[in-house]
Length: 508
Image (cartoon, rainbow, N blue to C red; front, side, top):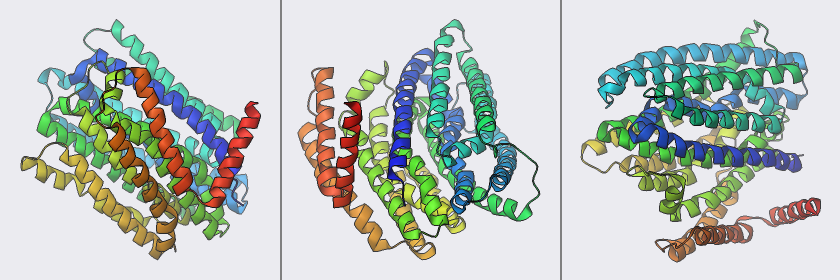
């Protein structure tokens, strides 16, 4: 049976993490933009984006190892098997790190010296940021096996506390920057590296002291190594192509508008990072049980849980996307002391992209649970990589820079259509059932919440922050009503009522 109470408990821990990390990260961006200035802030977003990229993908990469751990836990295997999986996971992450360093150093240095638009006076700082970003990425990748254990063992409280500590330490770095002169950008990159290293050590020590399988031993199981390598390799390729496509967009913006556009894109991706983390909480909570159920050959239950997770991730995204979309100017004005040009349009387009991208989560979970990664990652990599050449051609023809985000949205719609067909053919997912349980209720809730909100609130003047807060509360209320009345089944409504009743009784 699916343990919805455990999922709910783990989700609460992750939402607590989300609130703290979000507030800190938003404040960090505000202060960092002020301390570095628009140009240096954009330069860090351009060059140091590799750290943010792999930092945001830690959970996705960890899910490769976590999938095998959960699969064996679901089958009831002992700690020796789990330790073998962990040890091989560490070895694979080490090999992937070496591969990543070689590729990034070769391609990255060529881009910095030959293609990117960077002030000649800041080339030295750019190189420092670049090399330190790669080192930080290696540390993050070597932390992934330990993240996988925490997720597989469903210790979301520790996972949350470590994320909060990471954000607090990075905030502390910002407050040190005023004490440094012209080398603030370099100092920031150095300190971010040491924060990554600190979190890595704490994570490692905790896992080793609490889980017997979190102890590395050189393992020669070639069959398991091959299975893990193939799975992790395809997962690495797919997620890396997705991330490099996004970083490629950043490079395109630099080529057609310089570091000022990179600053605007960095702000938009800060918003994206917040929303993505918001949604991944449910997925991180439900993924272990999706794999457990699939390992026990309970495919129907596994599919249903993935569908439910996908649907409610979309609903939750509306709670964030709608208010921010309507009041982008006001939110950015409160958040930032100086708003980079194009930030408003970039943020709104990224929010629309996220509404489409959210459906990807359920497919990702199911393909990983089934271990069917090759065709899934190959097709996704090919489709998503179309963003760069199409965007470049359109920018070259004189289109506005916002076109790159429009292309991202269109390509993602095509990608989801292909994934639905693949999941039906390879895993046995019913297309009609998916449309009925996920797409149709999501579309209804979107339709009956977005248009009323847009007509009532969009382009209306806001006289004060309390009025802004009140309007946002009303918008969230409209979404909540639509979710309950149009997006929830009778059983889901009953569970929501019982869960809220239980929570209220605990408060009393």
